[in-house]
Structure formats: C-alpha cells, structure tokens
Length: 502
Image (cartoon, rainbow, N blue to C red):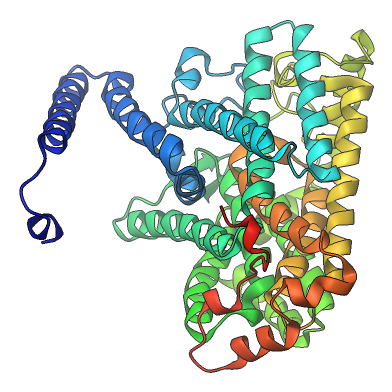
C-alpha cells in the first residue's frame, strides 16, 4: 500500500527490483541443481553469497542496524554449517570450515567493523577504549604473533580470525552503546537470538527430531549449534544475565523474558554439559547474593531438583566425575582424573616455545587424543606462550574489575543495576568454567558475553557522582519499572548527552 501511495515506481527502483528478482531466481536454480547432485556446499553457497551481498549493503548504509542483525541471527548460523565437529579428529575442517556461513559472516563483520571504527576514529580523533578493550586486543595480538610460528599457520590464522570477531564486537559496541536507546536495542537483539535458538530446538523436538548428538551413552541436546557444549554455554550466559535484569523490566518485558528463561533452563539441563550447568548455578548464586534475593536461591534449588527428576541423565553425567579413565581410553567420560592426566601431557608442549607458544588451535593436533586442553588458562600458555597467558589473565581480571565497578556505581532500582549484576554473574561463571573447559573456543557464545561486558563497561565508566543522572536518575527509573504496563524501553539505559547521538 505504501508503494502505491507513492505513485509510479522510478526506473532505477524497477531496475533494482528486477535485478534482485533475477539474483534470487538464479540462486534458487543453482541450489536446486546442487541439491540434486548431492553437494551440500554448492547448495548453501549461492544463498550465502546472496545473503552476504545484502548484509554488506546494510553494513555500509546502516551499520548500527547491521550489528543488531548480527547479534540476533548469530545463534542460528551453525544450522548451515558445512564442516562437521572437529573435536577428537585432529582436523580443523579445512576448506569446508573456511566456507562455513559463520566464517564468512565473521570475515564480513571484521571488514565492516574495521572500516567503521576507522571512520569513527577519523571523525572523533580517537576511539573510546576501555582497559578491557585493550586487553582483548592484546589477546588477539599475542595469538597472531604465535600463529607466525605455528606448524599449521592457516589453521592458527583461522582461529585468530575467529577471536578477532569477538574483539571487534566489543570495540564496536563500546562506541555504539552510549548512543540513545542502543542499550535497549542490543538487549532486544540478544534475546531475539535466544528466541530463535529455543524456537528451532522446540519445533524440531515437537516434530520428533530433536537436534542432538550422541556422546558415549548420553544423548545431548545441541540446539542450533553443532555441539551440545556450545549450546549449553550459550544458554548459561543467557540465563544468568536474564535473571540479573529481570526485576528491572516492565510487566510485558518480564512476561516475554520468563517465556524464554524457563525453556532455556530446561534445555540447559538436557545439553548434559556439566561445566555449563555448574557455571549457571555459580552465576545465579552471584546474582542472588548481589540482588539479596532469597527467592532466587529457592528457585535455583527447585530447578536443580526438577532437572534431576525430569532428566535423570544429568545425575548420571555428574556421577562420571568419580569414574576412572586413562588418557587414550574410551570416547566419553572426561572425568576430573582424565583432565588432570591430560593437562600434565599438554603442558609439556609449551617447552618448544614457552614465550609465544605452539600456535592457536594446535593442541588438538599435537596430542594422541586430538582434544583441546579443557582449560583455557593452560591453553593460553601452551598455544600462545607466556605473553598470551599474561594477556588472557589481564582480560580475566579486567572482566571481574569491570563487573565489580559496575555493581558499585549502578544506581539502586535501575536497569543499570541489573546489567551490572547480570554481568557479574556471567564473569564469575566464565572464570569458573574456563578452568575446566574450552570456553574461548565457543566464539559464538563470546559474542554475547562481549555484548554483556560492553553494557557493564558503560555503567562502570560513569563517574560515581553522575551515575544517577546518566542512568536517567534512579528514582525515575524505579518509577518507570514499578508502574504497571511499563515497557522495557522505558527502563533501558540511555545516554543523556545529545552530542553522542549520531
């Protein structure tokens, strides 16, 4: 109707419409022939190229909208993954992984973010960068230096590329979030991604084909991701942060978030990812303590009982922690004893080059088990040396410092407080889980962790004396949240400086 009211279409608009229609038709034809020929790569590639062109146009014309779109859809990109899981294979997926939509999206995001950040630096003289942002840059830089001495430079370079997308996301959000309404929009995009992930998992489960993987004697829900562990850690962060901000949302937003958090907890249990379940419990305890919420503690206990009752495999999975298994043994278990033995084997790899390490993503290619270290601190030392370990420790400490500062400066009764508490829970969970698993490998989950960190950094950066005014005043925010029917947007954090709205 809008088009009709505007009158006849212009020749240029008609030409673009015709070109888009022809491109869509060509894409469909090429993909149909590829499916008929049994080539999954050729079937997905035309759609990936077409979508890439459209997204590139959006990135060049509406960069903020492009970033929000990436946050909203990133959780479902693995549905179109061409390469299979590489854990335990000693392979990095080769060319198939390089053509994965997630990899192509990452490359496009890096290019777009780099150009946009350069333009912002040129326009403003310099970029607003926090110490945490600098630490993330150092983590990527030490990885790049280590990749130069890797036995497989291409494999290490691909891993560095993936880490760089996380760094770029954090740096971009640091620049975007101070703009008016951006915190609200980023929160919306993040939880839209959760809605898409849960929706896919639920629909497939109702159709009788739940997305899952079999590991040993366990069937574990993997959602839209290629591995159940990735799905579990993604849900871990979403649940913790969601519980942190919940009480500061309006009535309708609370209902919407509840609809997401309840199935998220259920699917988290069904992933049977011990580190994610324990991490979620630790993070939620932090949230409950900081919010002084006895109800959340009781709810957490009831959820644990329900998880064991509904999914008895969870209890069996945790029982494996006491089982014995030698390195090089069966394909499942991953007990504490196995980890300790494997760590003692992995740490000796760093003797080749203790300063810069053996190269990112190389541990699983240098051991008989062909597995990652299951300890991000050890992995940082072995793969990127002492320099990489120092950068990683700096990042960890600054995450905790950012969380503590945000909690201290956030006005009571405001969404700022929820963001600070939510990220504090996520940061503590991140540290705990990193000590016994490969969190740094799950780049998709780190995108959302980076988003939460950037929001908390915005709260932490406000001078203590101006915290109330920057957040729209604690009393006003509390009134908006408590008023029946108040929306999430009314309780969102926004910059009061009109000059920052570009």
